[in-house]
Image (cartoon, rainbow, N blue to C red; front, side, top):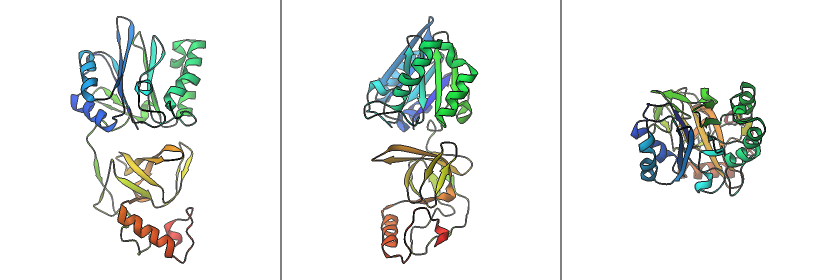
Length: 297
């Protein structure tokens, strides 16, 4: 999922928050800062020690940081953030921008080459600070977040409301925190009694890194993506309103994300559950239809 971070001058990000951000997003780190009206971009750190040794001398400066989890593109320095638009302007991205990305290069790389650079080349760096341009891009990138910084210290966060401010630091998601555990409220389910691994039950927990299965269809209205019952996801964020953000690593379509999925739509997933689920599909007198809900049985 990655995490993007912004902070002003003289604010120091806690060391533990940085280390947790790297541990949660270990596919390459980078940061940028302004010094003497020059924009400095450093990236391609694949151990936390490498990152910390480079960042520590600048930790009191205004800065933008990024820790990557691979989606599109290979794991290398070229696909690490920040991405230079030009020598005086750069940005970082958290999320997935649909329609961009390839085998070798990330969706952010292509978004920069095909959208951001042409805009800036024609209209200048300040184009990205225009409210109309910002609104257009925010409507295109859905749940993604972008942070731009120029050599004068002008900064702009796109989809700022989808992240969180914590002690003067803006984080694009909660992966800077230790893995959060949330108790699931009691809900009622209509699910075949044959399954000995039923849906999420009271006093069980949903936490980051958990494998879950959708027990009913889910439509992400913001991303305009439909997910079928039965799809398997990894939990990447747990939200305070008893919803979760999920990632599905599909061998054909690559990584997909579902946001704000209610806990009531989720089953815990393990090998025993999978065996029961497969047996049910093979032996049930009802024809399996992924568009049905459990209540249809």
